[in-house]
Image (cartoon, rainbow, N blue to C red; front, side):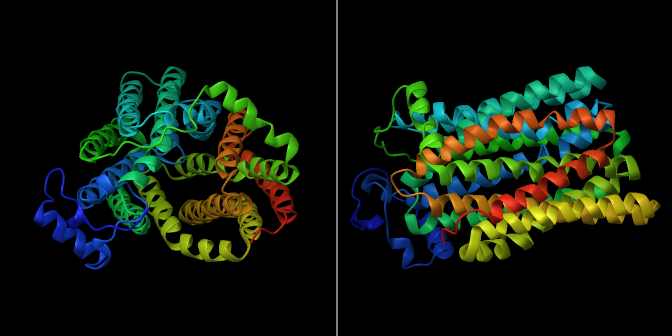
Length: 446
């Protein structure tokens, strides 16, 4: 599409001058005048769309972190006395609910000229799901609370899948190609600072493990952020888009699943990515270990801070490493996850008190860094391995298959009840070594 400037668009409402000035300050005065790869009708609304998407994406990220299946929910469920077998299903349900339906949902979304309503429906259901989980934590405990919270998480993850599929399409139609990374970067930075602030506040709350009512308050705050995100997202002026690629979801799904039979490189990548799920499944068991070892407010607040710092400090390093060899990033990250498991074992075997808590917190930080490396490495590898013609199919098929396997991985929580959280961590660490060996065998694509 030819480049145009906002001033060249003569139809519709005028651009708010204050908003236009702020937009120029954020992206640069010269670049603010350029529209790339967006409909002509959206060019004049780009300042409005830029900030609307920025605010909505920031608030949704904060909401996601305040009900994190890797940190907040396992801590809350442990405080409510929920069996560990149910805690083990938190991450599988959270991830699988987003991944599994993508083959079906993506075809439906592509058939709609307007995708913003899909995102708003997903956001509304997300807020209602959080209300369900908060009510379960308030009025029940033990097994009953765990079942209801998992049910709420099922609806939350399915709703997030709707948001995930539609958000990128809306971004592509509303914000210039040269400005999309800026939107995502600013939203990640602001949401990260907000989450760190919550972590600092929680470090000052004594005996947090004994105050589930305070913990469920985080879910209500997350619900509030979803409402704010919806309010911001409604301000986006979306132009109608192409509807090619839509159709019957089941027929499209079966057709694309044939890639697993015909493409051996892609099939081995999916197997390797499935083995890497061992890294994604570990964090909740670390959280339970920290809670059982410390029992106060410092543990959760510290873990929130560690999680935020791990992501912000390591992403740039993993990104540059992935540009050279993404399969090596996955292998190194998997090895690091195994080393974190060894550190957790050593801390439990040889340390006690505060020293033990510090050792576990350090191991948790390492596993979060490695989890970030796995996510970034496998995304970069898939993008570089695929071509423009098959990239969308590769993403949908791999996400769906891995989502199904992730659900099966939830059974590791049963082992946690039979043995201990540390035993599960060590078992998953062994699987991470196997994943590292598989990733090292992947062909180079850079």
